[in-house]
Every structure is written in structure tokens, then in C-alpha cells.
Amino acid sequence: MAYRAGRHFLQIPGPSPVPDRISRAIDAAVIDHRGPDFADLGKSVLSGMQRIFKTKSPVVIYPSSGTGAWEACLANVLTAGDQVVFYETGQFATLWKQMADRLGIETEFLAGDWRHGVDANRIEERLRQDTAHAIKAVCCVHHETSCGITSDIASVRQAIDATGHPALLLVDSISGLGSVDYEHDGWGADVTVSGSQKGLMMPPGLGFNALSERAIEVAKRGGSKRSYWDWEEMLVSNATGYFPYTPATTLLYGLKEAIAMLEEEGLDNVFARHLRLAEACRQAVAAWGLEIVCQNPAEHSNVLTGIMMPDGHDADAVRRMILERFDMSLGTGLGKLKGRAFRIGHLGDFNELTLMGTLSGVEMGLGLAGVPHKAGGVEAAMQVLMR
Ligand SMILES: *Cc1c(COP(=O)(O)O)cnc(C)c1O
Image (cartoon, rainbow, N blue to C red; front, side, top):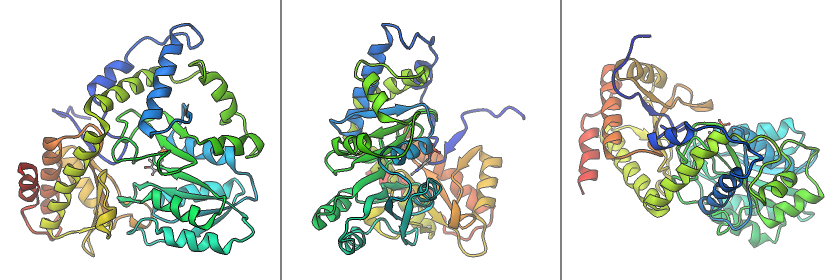
């Protein structure tokens, strides 16, 4: 492949670009994970992740993708034959449910249209019908990456509590954590699943489970047969800063730096930056006269913007054109949205001018690909940023 000058624009909604500070932190010697120095690193990232998840309960760190952390969550608190309700927000909710199906869990899907977030009233209604309390858990995706939709997780907890139903609340915030507010304890999640390569600005390779006391209790008494994913052994080792098996040491160096960066900026400022840049991106889409996938403004994503293609135009052809001409990767349409939508990632290590470069590439690509749109999206975003 010929050399391409300048930085590649990796504007997919995860993996997000890794800042140099994190890359440099990762580029360090591997140490003895049973030696005296390791405990400081272990304790630092474990307590740091509690602050990021906003929890006083333990966070478990796996050398895994987000998908592995999904399985860890299910395996620790559920077993084959258990009844579980999933809410269809998009492709990631679908994939998590399919995983549960494969594990023999009796899943039920509350159908959604991929353009709206979780409707807590429907969860409340379903739980009220379950007077025998057969449903063991409710599973929701906090930020649905396939569509760009943020769901109100606190409202789901309120719905569960309003019915007095004992179901656990299991949440995927793989792409929300570190970019938009997430409160594991405050919103009453029992397990929150996350991963390293989205809002945490890390390379792929770490998966997380934030736990609750109740989830730990349920796991002690039940769950599936499991070994690698088992929380119990992890928690015993983690108490002194160690891991039961070889951790991804160099990624933990990176994670320590990522936590430091998020805290130097301040989590609230990180979220405000994501909101501001997302708002500018949405103004650009409005000026182009194109449609955002998410139809409820209250649920618009500050992590990415999903854009519907006018009929007869292939989103992947536009993405290909933009990659070839401007060396920028945009997110493909997933599942039902394949070819019908593309996604602009605006998360992680991202600022005003990265947004402007990104939007310029998209506007030029729309023109070159012959997609009907109005000019002026880039200008509209600049107006927002100059406020
Ligand atoms: C990225 C993502 C996943 C999958 O994570 P992997 O690391 O690819 O296994 C799951 N859920 C959501 C919401 C995601 O954004």
C-alpha cells in the first residue's frame, strides 16, 4: 500500500483513536504480574474504574473484548432455562440476546424499531404480568452503537422497582462509558458491561463488569458453570491488586493513563465536550437535509451520529469513496441498517477541529458520491462551535 501522509481519520464509533499519551504509556516493559510492583498498578486501575463507573462496588477487568464481558455478566448471574427480558434497541441488543439464546437462556425480546431507546413503561408492563417472578433479569443497552441512541437507564430501574419485581438490571454501556454520563450505583444497575476501545480511548482488549452487592450474592448462589469468567476468584485476587491469571499488563498501563486523562479533564467536562461536538454534528446533518437515525431528540447520541441515506443510495458506497479519497473511516450500517445508514463517530480523543475535518470529509464525500443533499453542513457546524 502506498504511504499516505498525515493521520488516518478513524471516525468509527469504536475503536476510537488512541491518544499518544496512552500509546506511550502502553509502550513499557512487561513486569512480573505476581511481583511487588504490580499491586500498585492493579489497585490503581481497579479503583480508578470504580470512579469511572461511579460505583462503590467492585469492577472486574478481563483481558477480553466487550463481547467477552457480556458473556461474563450472563454466566455469573444466569443459567440455562432462566427467563430474561431483552429490549431491542438495535444490533448490539440483538447480538447480546443471541448470545443468551446460545447459552440456553429463555430470552424474550421487547421489539423496537431501532430509532428509539428503551421505553421503561413496556418493561414495567411486562414485569407486572410476571406475578410468579419467573423473570430473572432485564437486559438493556445504555448507548446503542448501531443506531446512535442513548436510553434512560434510571427510568428502567424505577420501572422495575415500581413493580416490586426482583429481576436484576443488566446493562451494556460498552460505548457510553467515558463519553456520556453513566452512574452504575445511582441508576441501580446490578451489572454494567463495558470495553476499553470506545470512550476510554484505549486499544481493544479489555472488558469490564461493574457489579452490585446483589449481583455478587446471586453469583455466589447460582449462575452457570463457569471458570475463566468467574467473579469470585477475581475478587479475591483483586483485593490485593492482583489477578488470578496473567492480566494484559501493558493495556493496564494504558488504562491507568486513560483514567488520569479523563480525570484531568474532569468527567463532567468530558461529557459536556461530547454534547457540544455532537450538537454541532447534528446541525450539519440538518443543514444537509439528511435524516438522523435516532428519532427522539432526548435520546440523541453524543458518541456518534447515524445518518439515513436517501432511497436508492448505498451508504457503503459513500463510505468507500470517503476512505479512498480522504483516508477517513466511517462506521458502516449494521444489521437492518446495512447499506441504509452510516455512522460518524465523535467520541473519545476528539475536538473541534477533528469534528470539522470529519464533517468536511463527509460533505465532500456526499457530493462526490452524488447523494442528494444541501450544501452548508460544515458551515452550520462552525456556527455552533463559534457560539
Ligand atoms: C462495541 C460494542 C459491543 C461489542 O464489543 P466488542 O469489543 O466488539 O466485543 C457491544 N455492545 C456495544 C453497545 C458496543 O458498542
